[in-house]
Length: 371
Ligand SMILES: Cc1cc2nc3c(=O)[nH]c(=O)nc-3n(C[C@H](O)[C@H](O)[C@H](O)COP(=O)(O)OP(=O)(O)OC[C@H]3O[C@@H](n4cnc5c(N)ncnc54)[C@H](O)[C@@H]3O)c2cc1C
Image: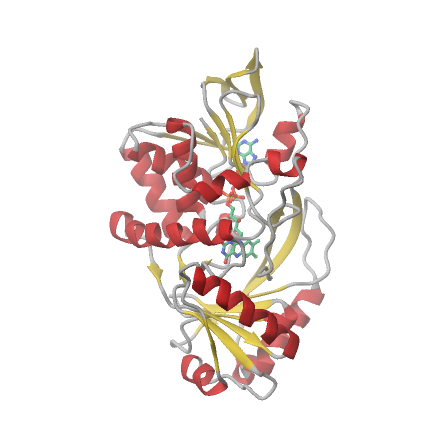
């Protein structure tokens, strides 16, 4: 049984099904209604840890398969990291070498190449950029709707409006889950409930280091195709991506304290607009259609917690994605399906992402985090 019907829960169910296991998902509201439908659609392997790169290289292979198997919109349209400070350029040169050594074909490019990739951009404040041609974007709506339809057609259950209340254990083994629709028996339970994973485990006296950090995004009306890559302004931790429908989806980091209920903030609109109208002055004319908030379920080392929980047979966690859960949902689905059916993931780097790393002080470093 899987608690949570976001991209993570659905992909775990999908890759379990590929191994012949039919699962039940309990989703409190409706699939996608958590952070999945709030995400910025970005997919990349240009990270700075072996663990993130290994998970994301596999996820990128799987995204191509999902495009063919389920008809999910996905394209390798790249990422462009804009750099305006000498120290950032120096740091990114080391990240690029590390990424290249690990099979991610990023490269430092000059401003004429930036102009080629985003013809209307104003480059006067920039020194250079890093281009990641392996990166891309996909539709969260397609992923949720198509995988949900597929799972149900093949005999899996996706229970909507069903809230998991309590995990029942006996003698260190999982028995099942008490839900708003009654008890569901299961010998394997996966918590894929983003920040609510913390609340569920609290009832078993287990504390999980995940904090909900509020994040903001807005989307404009649709334009003709103006640039393909998702563009990051590294110095302000801001991004813009043109969706496949033509809208510009914009995000930017503002000071926030962890908290369960993100509130609207004018400060976000001011900062995000200022950053992107400097690079694209024509954006001043764009109408804003919608502004929303969600959160990154964030761990102290910005890596997810994926795998079994020590000493609790049958209980698994897949949460704490720290802003990268949509992109890695296919490989996380595969890793979790391996854990459950074979007792070990094929991606060995995933072994470093269990919960025990916090207790043992084996935190994993990641520098390329933004938004
Ligand atoms: C503004 C913004 C931009 C982002 N951009 C990107 C991006 O470009 N790329 C990327 O990879 N990631 C991005 N993310 C992060 C991404 O959205 C998340 O990491 C991802 O959606 C996590 O998926 P999930 O399935 O683990 O969690 P969620 O989608 O949050 O799903 C968890 C589900 O569990 C359900 N649930 C909770 N408690 C219970 C319970 N007790 N019983 C039953 N159901 C329960 C919830 O209703 C929810 O549907 C972004 C996030 C935000 C907010």
